[in-house]
Length: 576
Image (cartoon, rainbow, N blue to C red):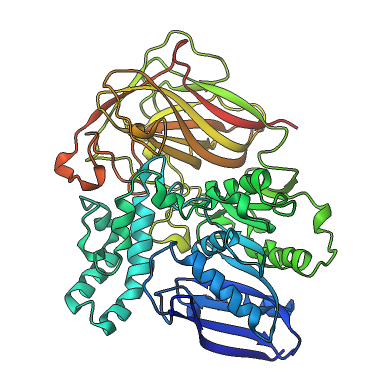
């Protein structure tokens, strides 16, 4: 197959800025539908990973474009805010080309996926379908913040390592970045674990010139109009095209992927839009393999074996070419169930036969660490002592696995199903476990944690993690969440607490699909920090991003579990 490549075609935008664009097509002269990928990570680097050859073989033209302000494209990069307009202009340009039949689909993961969702709700008649992988429904919740806490680890890793460093060469050439500033940026990249500890987090000088958008993100700690203006979830009614959503149980955008599916099914702007598809594997961000150092899911869990690109092509063929390939007759949801290590087709998400079951927290007041007396059961609590621990932001609970994105992500070095047994020796980690299970227990669906709490502080964080405890003592994380107490009622407005007053908090622990095998135990961890995945709450009630470590104060936090305060973990039990 002969491939024709037009390199760095400069495509004009409505404001005169031109974006560098590559066009890949075969020797065929007939007009064909186009697969568009838009990215800020260099179109030259992306070709191998974007399965261009598979798309070409399937009969599509492929267009890969550097987003505004990145690499070969003109303008200034401001993540998210220019993607809708630039995408619309790019689609119009594609539709006018002789090799185009006027139909465009989009593909790609993470930020590629963000460019798809923002364009899906725009003025883009040529766009016929999107296949968005591992991406979110909002660039506030589940991207930059979660439960009101700043996604420090991801944002700094992404901004310093993926965005700012790549832009430095261009800035040097333009004379806007000197050698000293460039050296500081390289040093920050090489020592990013030290950068995580820097306070105030709003004052990271190395990003001021090369990534000014970071300051905007930190300056908007609530879900205000700044964030809503770009959030896909605000515009589902404006999306009329079919959508394929692919995600991972350990992906940092898992919750957004699931919400995009549910949002389109309930609020999509057409009958076709209200029939989305969903695929979730046991993957982390940038890791689609099936073997982690702490848990293996078998060969069939591997994304390459599953062939997610082939799934996308089949999806495009049905909705762009009208090919009756049987897709309409298949269930819309495909999930990998960990523990059972099988793929399973389902009628919907959450699963229609889900039994949301409360597992109540119990203890004699000594649930501190896995060696304590914390337990979980479906029996409501009687009169019990509260559990107490000290949260000191100078000594936070470290991030160990889960849906995170830290250095070493391509090796799964920090994300995924890591063993947390050492973490559970800390006195500021409360552990509540079921007895050893006599039968396999499947937990598939959204997981939530309802805590009745008091604190000595006017604001603090509460975290929860669902863990699968193996017979050999491994405590392997499945999913987790966090809530900054000032946002207990809404992430749109902060409300400080009154020290000593009891509050009921609901923490979203996102979702999982796991069979807890007979001989295992279900465990809940409760604490107040998860660093550096999230920034540390200073406990002062002030503007956390502007505070230094010298401002931090400890907080004495209590978890109540008695008849008036039935703290509980709500699990989606599947009993078939």
